Every structure is written in structure tokens, then in C-alpha cells.
Image 1: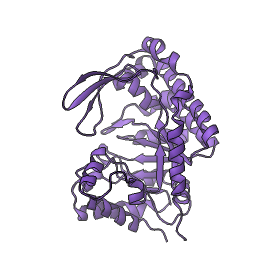
Image 2: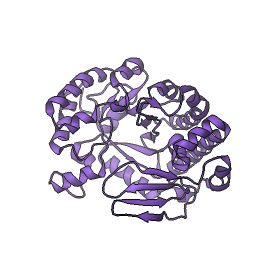
Image 3: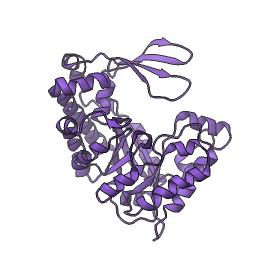
Image 4: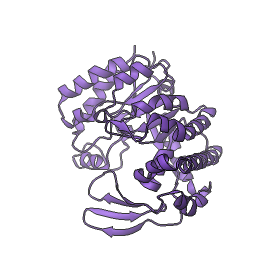
Length: 361
């Protein structure tokens, strides 16, 4: 087969149609780029997708906080952390010295009354919610390089988590499911309305990418039944809008989400991304069970990259890539973002060896 462009390759991979090789994409912690730049491996403004030859670009151009006019309010600041209140009234503590998941401190919305008073009335499809210029520039950048381009954003579970925190959202699913269903429907419709505005003016992307972290170590945040009854209707509606425009849907979810995969497939997901090994996810098992209907991205244990031991990298890649490339639906990616403990040469070797194993005759 002749070498394909990244657009051709990713389009086929997401449909499990013939390709020349597996795809390539990655996420990095900001600290990693800083270290590799200081060491002289990459230049200050260099595009990592260009540097490593990734097949995809994406951009997240929507602002979904309730109060668009509110500037994040700094409540407390130390040498290491900053405590900020955002436009949803959520109080989050973030690390200043390194990238990390923010600590959830407190939330304005803890129940239906808080949602209906403070958040829902503000969630209109205002053009101010869309960064048209960021989308335009990212799309043009991808086109110039013939890379597959995704609109990216958070979907309902991730949005609600940012508004209420996991605790109140999950309590709501159990004690007041109609409230959570209302949030699901409201945010799904808002996202669709904004996508319609953006795509009609700036053109469609090649695909849709949703961040939706629905699991932690060993289990999802909700049962498959609760997922189907409360969250899946929003997913089905949002994914159907994408598919009506011929746009494949990739779902990023950290944590253990294997029990939710059947429902996600029913909702219309085309590709599952990150497949976190340390949380209990198993790429080979997923491929065996769903490889005929689902594409995959990730599932390579990033801890072998922490070791900076090429023998361990070889063993991980050799155990998985030759198998999952079989149905032409796999894209090489770690099972999480690359931290600064991974040496540049290790990651470079990971890419080169992975693509070598992922060549398809």
C-alpha cells in the first residue's frame, strides 16, 4: 500500500478500513516539554506534532462555565498552589510548580436548587462561548500539514463533575436522578447548538473528540445501569449529531471504564482512548471483545516508559501492537500523558519501535 496522508490514515483507522500503518498521537504534561526544551531536544516554539510526526491535531474552542464574564477569582495563593473560584462557582486548588489534577475544594452547586438558581439560566448558546479564531487557526494548521483535525471538548459527565464535583453529582444520580438528567440534557443541547454555530461558519472538522473521565482505579464512577439510565441519553444525542455529519467520535476516559464500553458503543462511540492499564484496563481484552466495532487509541502502559529501559518498552509494544493492528483500528498512544521522568530518547524510541511494529503490508 502506498504511504497515506494522516487525514487518510486516521479516517480509515476510525472506520477500521485498510491503512499503511497504525496511527500516532500523544499527550504530554507541560513539565515534560519544559525539560526536553531545556535539554535542547526541541525548540521553544516547536510543534510536538511536527517534531514526532503525529497524525492528529485538535482544539478545544468552547467555554461552558455559567458566568462568562467572571474572571477567575484568586482566593488564596502560596509558593506551590493557587486556590481559584471559577465561573461555575467551583473552588479548585491547582499546583503552580507542576502539572496535576486540581483538588476539588468546594462547589456552589450541590443540588437541584443550586443548579436551577445559579447555573441553568445562564447556559445559552452565546457566540461568546466560542473561540472562533482558535478553531480557525488550528484547522488551517492541520490542513497545511495534512493532519486529521478534531474539534475537542468535554462531554456531560466531565462538565457536571466540574460544576458539582463527583460527590454531589453521584449523590444526585442516586437520590435525585431527574436533576442529573436535566443537567445531562442541558449540556448536551448546549454543546450541539454551539457546534452547529461553529461548523456552519468555519467548516467541519474531520472528527469529534470528547474528554469524559468516567472511571478510577478498578471501577467506573457509576454502574452500567446508572450510566444507561442517566448519562447515555446525552451521549447518544451528542454522538448522533456528530455522526449525522459523518464525523467519527473518539471518547477519552481515564480510569477503569470497561463495564461502560457496551453502553458507549450503543451510544455511537467510534474509538476509545487512553485505556489506562494501572486502573485495570486491558487493551488486548477490549480488542478481542470489541475490535470488530470499535477502534482504540492508547493502552500502552506508560510506566514502562518511566523506566527508560528499552527492553521493557520492547516487551510492552511487542505484546500488544502486532495483535491490535490486525483490524486496522489502532493508534499508538501511551495510556496516559507523558511525564517529565520519561527521557526524550526513550519516547523517541517508543515512537520509532511502535511504528515499526505497526506497519501493515
